[in-house]
Length: 146
Image (spheres, rainbow, N blue to C red):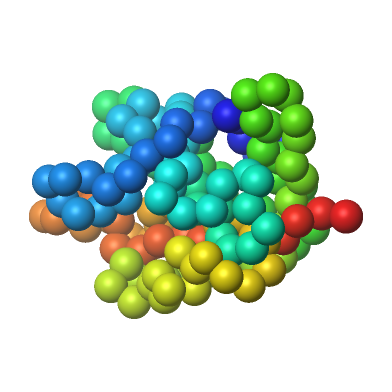
């Protein structure tokens, strides 16, 4: 599967991922140029719910991640997923939000019901040197186009 966002000049491979057994967090691919689709939630063929894809904003070693400029997306931006056969699924950005990781409304973003939508997630906000991670998550919501 592939993800492209023209406004970010992004073309990234999408890996199917689950939960990291050690941390209990979303298992984002270790390579910062790849993003991860939550395989236990809705997929491209779904008629309802939230397709969730997460990626790194950056890395101290690898530098800028696939979602480095995710927070700069604006309403109306095109997001395209492509399945292994080449079929395209277009989405239009309808919102960009930032939440403290401890306060993100997970039930909204990992929903299996409601209108089909795409949720893109990365880290944001201030970086905590002691904790070695960002305080917040940036969440982009996009709805199926046309």
